[in-house]
Image 1 (tube, helix red, strand yellow):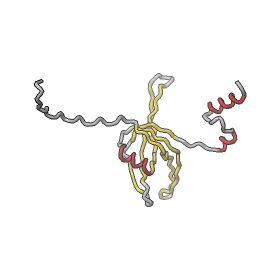
Image 2: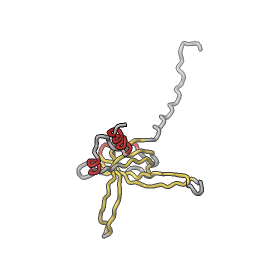
Image 3: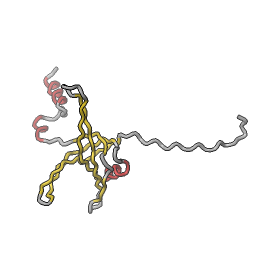
Image 4: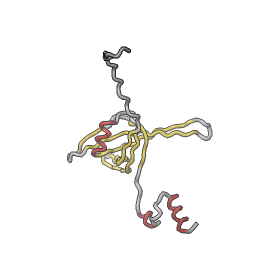
Length: 154
């Protein structure tokens, strides 16, 4: 194996493109979150003064594991705030409800504000991708219509 191929394989193991030099990748940051979970409430929508639709979601992500010491299944749920803008927000508001299972991908954003003298901070996921994971609802079965009489004897 040539040194060049070995170096490219090392970049691939690190999740980097082979043509990127180490100094280039170290100077750039990477901010991406991918979450799969269920909505804890119906989507909340509002419109900015500029007319942009904003949709807020509360996403519960459960992880489970088997404890090494006891062999029992353990689980925990973490809650994430997600924000969707524009058309993505419209789609979420129209199709999602409490309990909907989704995959959401975006960047992590940290906001800080003053709340009556207390400094508040929240981390949110600003979504750029949304995938609905629920099975499509089954169409209501149409009632059988009365048989049509025909000239066929059977």
